[in-house]
Image 1 (tube, rainbow, N blue to C red):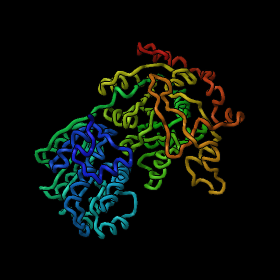
Image 2: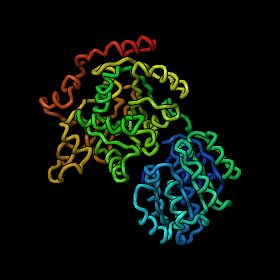
Image 3: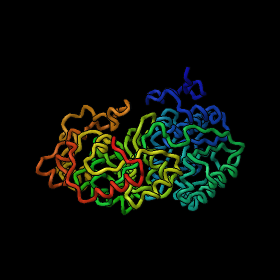
Image 4: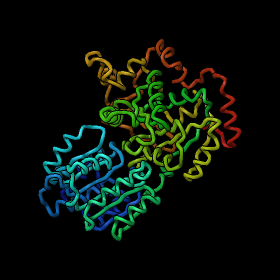
Length: 492
C-alpha cells in the first residue's frame, strides 16, 4: 500500500488542503524527509527541481508553527525561507498560501526590484513566515526592519543555485543572525563545496535524504540537432510554432531579447525572462506563460530556476549552456510532476566539440541528428500544426499593453473553441502523450493565418506546416558536415 501524507505524520487539516489540490501521494523526496522534518530534526534533502521539494519543507514548517501557536511580533518572523530568485520566492508563496489560510498563519514575500514600503509595513504588523531573497532581506535587516532572533525554522531552498549566483556569503550573514537552536532544512539538487560549507556550519547532525537528485534521464528524450548558423533561426521558429508550451534558453540577456523579437516578427507570440526586465515585466511575462496566454518563453540561465510550470513538454537550448550543471537546470523545466519531456540542443558546426564535452559531463547520451528546416525530425520532436499569426497580433498577445484595450481581441474570440488544448508534443511517440491542458484552455493549433500573410510575415507559410522543405539557403553542407563528423546523424 503506497504511503499517504497522513501516515507520514502530516496533520489532518493539511492533508485535507492537499487533497483539495489533488495532491494525495507523496513524492519520493517528501516521503523520505517528512518523518524527520515533522519531528524537528535538521534535514539535508537532495532532489532535482520538480521532485516536490517545496511541500517537503512547507508541510513541516506549517505543522510545527501551528503546533505551538503564538502571535508573531512586529519585525520578528517565526520562520524564514530563503530562495535564490524572485520567481521562485513567488511560487513558494503561492504553494504556501492555502496551507497558511487553513491554519491562520501570516506570510510575506520580500525581494528586490520593487518598492520596499509595502514589505516594511507587513513586517511591522508581524509575519509568521517570511519568504525572502537574500539581497533584499539583508537590506531590510540593515535598516532594522527585520530581526531574526525569533526564527524557529529556517529553510534554504535550491542552495546550489544560491552558490551559482554568488549568494552564499549573503546566506551566511543571514543565517548567522538566526538562533542556533532552531530547526534548519536545506534543499539542493547537488552538494558542491560551497553548499557543503553551509551544511557543516549551520545544520546540526542533519538527516540526509536523496531522491530524484539527478536529471530525470529516463523521463526525458535528449536530442542534439545539427544546424547551420544560417538556418538556426528557421529551426527555432519551427519548433516554437508547434502547439504547446516551449521554453527556449539563451546564454545572454541580449540573446533572449533578440530571439523573442525575432519570433514575434515571424508571427509566434513569445515572452522573455531575464535580468534586465523590471519586476512588473518579469511577473507579467511569467504569468502569461504559466496561464497559457503565451506558449513560448525565451529565458536565460539566471531565470531558469524560477520557472515552475508542470506541463512544459519541450525545452530547447537555442544556445548550448556554458557548463553541464546549467544544462541539467535548464532541462529540469520539463519532465516535471511525473510527466515526460523532450530536450533539444541546437548545435552549429563550430559548437560540436563543446557540446560533446557538455554531454559527457552531464552523463547524457543524446540522439544526434542533422536537420534542415521542414525536416520530418522536427515534426516528430514537436508534433502538431505550425501556426504563424500576423506579427501585430503576435505582438498584442506577447505584450497586451502595447495597444489600447478596446483594440485587442480576447483570446477566446480569436481562437474559437476554448474547450481544450491539443495533446502534448510527444504525440504518439513511445505511447507517452502528455495532456497539455492549461488554465486558459486555449488551443494554439486552432489558430489560422491568412495565406497571403503567411508567406510575407514569416517567410515560411503553408510549406512549413505541411512538412515540405523550403528551398535551402545553401546551408545543407553545414548539416551534412555535422552528421559526418558526429558519426551518429540519423533521421527518425
